[in-house]
Image (cartoon, rainbow, N blue to C red; front, top):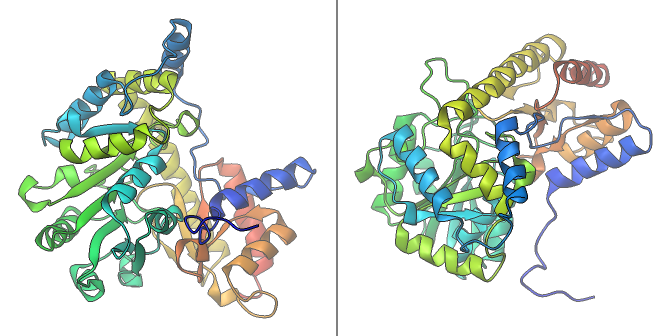
Amino acid sequence: MRFSANVEKLQPSATIAVSTLAKKLRSEGRDILDLSAGEPDFDTPDFIAEAGILGIQEGKTRYTPAGGMPELRKAIAAEVTRRTGTPVDWNGVVVSAGAKQSLFNACFTLFGPGDQVLIASPYWTSYPEIVTLARAESVFVAGPEENDFLLRVEDLERARTPRTRGLILCTPSNPTGAVYRADELQAIAEWARDHDIWLISDEIYRQINFSDDGSGATGLHDLPADSVGPHVVIDGASKSFAMTGWRIGFSISSPETAKAFTALQSHITSNPATPSQVAALRAYLDPERTAAAVAEMCTAFRRRRDLVVEMIREHLPGFQYIQPRGAFYVFLRVDSAFGGRIMDSSAFCSRLLEETGVALVPGVAFGDDRYVRMSYATSDEILAESIRRMAGMLAPAG
């Protein structure tokens, strides 16, 4: 069977594939500990879920404008303005069926054949696939490993060509948990501005961070306005509000750019699910209650992060990792265990799942075959048992 050139180079999502396999093995009776999932294990806060239910009961189930309910777009703009002090025009907000669609809208609208898009590596698995769908070319750029792979201007400048049209980065990062400081992000933004390069900043994990000084994770809207050129901020309700299945993401850009995104979306999915928008609206209209719910989840994520890091040091000495400062992942370097049947991260994860029942995502999916990604969006007990099982398999190599 022959498929269109539009999709012939696409690869299925490795994170979804691992999670699906783990669920299948569990359904067959295997004792599986799944650390592959990219979603919080918490329920959506009650007051948000109840708003969605009430919306259905009140008949709020019809189409909305393609770019989302105006009241939701206004609430998002008002919250970002309140939080950052940077005025955000609600006409620049486009609500989509998840942040992934927001990213697709941006790449498909802004890039095309002949364009090169720099992607901060390690990267979320869908970035290069979405760029491919836009018929553009991905160029992967990594900062120094000793600096958590965070990009510097000199790294970007080495990769820039006359065809460079965009840059995609994620902070806090999936898969590493690394977070850009304000000065680091501003330097990158000014570089992109000076070279007329579209900067797409994926900030879906922005509220899940572990800064010691309480400053949080810096985003583009936290920077001086004159330091940022053409840009798109990607965010949403999925991670911070534990609303992954509700499928609410959004982009913030100029009103002119947002108009183009909306036109594209109107021909693909039209509006995101109306009850989901009603639920998200409740979250953005009640910032104090929402902030309290997010803080409670972040407290749990920080405790789990500390537990995982401590156990890696104790049970897997010699295995390096990136210190997570946000999101809910540990990026663990495992190439010291390669050899024999284990020649790469995929083989490592396959053997680990087969022998111990622990499911991780191979680092090759994120652009670095030396690593694996471990999610700590699960209970303390499962995390502790998972690392003990890993240590049992890796002890000879460690």
